Every structure is written in C-alpha cells, then in structure tokens.
Image (cartoon, rainbow, N blue to C red; front, side, top):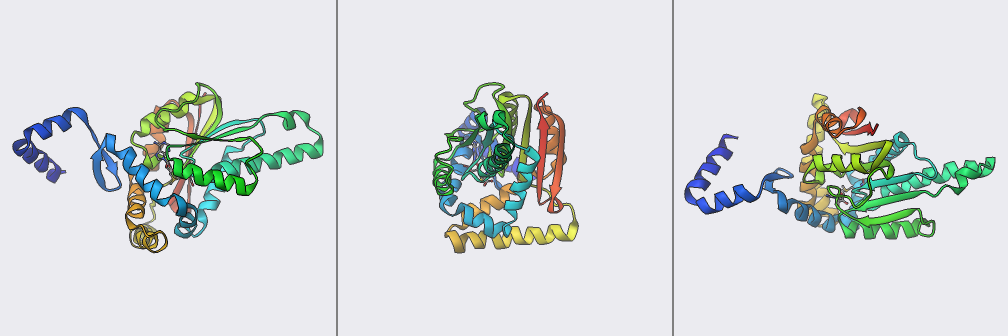
Length: 289
Ligand SMILES: C[S@@+](CC[C@H](N)C(=O)[O-])C[C@H]1O[C@@H](n2cnc3c(N)ncnc32)[C@H](O)[C@@H]1O
C-alpha cells in the first residue's frame, strides 16, 4: 500500500500530465495479481480465453483431476432444472454447464413420456449460453454437434458481456455463472444484470473457486495452484502465462461471506452458499423475489 502511494507521488511529480489523465479517465482493477486499467481488462481476459479455448476442457480435467465435473453436477442439481424453463448460463464458455442442464431436463422429459404427461412434453425449453469470447463459444458449438444437441433447438449460443446483457427484463427462470465471475471487470454490474433478467422467483447460482480456510490444506492447495498449474499449462498447452493468470485470479473473490453480501446488495434474497472440498469451490445462490 505504502509502495503504491510512493509510486503514485513520484508519478505525479515526474509525469504530471500522464498521472492526471489516467486519474481522470481510468480506474485500476485486478488482472490476476497485476493492476491494470479497467478499460483494458476485458481485452486481456479475452486474450487468455482465446489462447486456452482449444485446450480448455482437457486442462479443466487435468487441473482439477476431473473434480470440476462433480462441482458442475452439484451446481445443476441445486438449480433443479425443469422442462420449459428459460435459462441463462453466463460466461458459459464451451457449454459444460448448459449441456448438464439440458441432459437433466431430457431425463425429466423421458419420465414424462413414460407417464404420458403432455404439458411436460410440449413445454419449449431454451438454454442460452452467453460468453464474451467467440472462440470459447465455437468450441462449445462443436461439442454440441458431437453430443447430438444441435437439432434439439434448445441451446442458443450468444456472444455477449455479462455486464450488459442483451436479454429482456424478467425473462429468465434461472441464471448460472460457473468459474466466470472472477474474470469480469465489475462484479456489481454482473449481479445487477443477473437480477434484472431473472423473473420473480428466478434463481441465481454461481460456482466459483474460493477461499480455503483449513491451514495445512490451504498451504498444499497454494503450492499446487502456484507451482503445478502454470507448469501444466506450459507442458500441455504451451502457455504458462494464461494459466498463471487463471491461478492468480482465484484470489480475487476469496471470501465467501463478502461475495454473499454483494449478491444480497444486488437485490437477491435467501442468499446462501455451500463450500465444496473445504472451500476450494463454493456455490452461492439467491432468489429474485
Ligand atoms: C473459466 S471459463 C468458464 C467456462 C464455463 N463456465 C465452465 O465452467 O467451463 C470463464 C469464461 O468467462 C468468459 N468471460 C470472461 N469475461 C466475461 C464477460 N465479461 N462476459 C461474459 N463472459 C465472460 C470467458 O470468455 C470464459 O469463457
């Protein structure tokens, strides 16, 4: 903190024009452990995900030893999706969460066929996968084709920014964001947009890497994150820097309580969270009443 103040004072002294301009036009925000101008962050995050898109799913499995699959399953079981729902998965990337939602809805429909429940079978489901990065969405569209979801028409891929969504007010039954919130520039704007697009009774769920409270486990986890993951990124994807950013960005939102109060400040009620694996990951949720 003191170092930052001294640097700012020296900056004012030696580069008065530069200092005053940046003061007027930009605020700093975090990009991993670095501070960058707010207006630069989205492009920098965009670069990271353009670089990792083609290896993203493989690296997710390697980095989490496959655990991300269980965490996403937990997110979707908490959502409890239903046929006919309008759902928005923001920062949806390559579609992992959306596919799980659709698979679950299809299972419910299958039971509906067996019991001849016509209203369940006729309801039109829409699951919107919204992401700012077209490369991630393109990988997702390819995966949807391979999984046979393309003809179904329930999945809709939308390029868009979580901070200013192109969806109508009160239009969604559910909203999920998995491993996305730490990458955005203004978390408050994302929460406010989530609240705006949800219908009354609609549910907000966020899955995110979080704060590990148990001391020895925390040290082991830090060692793994900072030493193993960037090296793995270099070996498998030939890209150490992007994975260094991904690890550093985890520390941005490392207090579950603080994030819960931000969700409540955005207008959500019944706000709660569940820690998974000692807080490595948390699922936060809230309802628009
Ligand atoms: C770690 S990936 C998570 C992808 C997917 N949800 C999953 O869990 O596999 C983060 C995603 O957030 C997207 N993203 C980053 N900033 C965004 C923003 N402002 N609006 C929408 N998506 C964003 C990135 O492009 C990337 O696809």
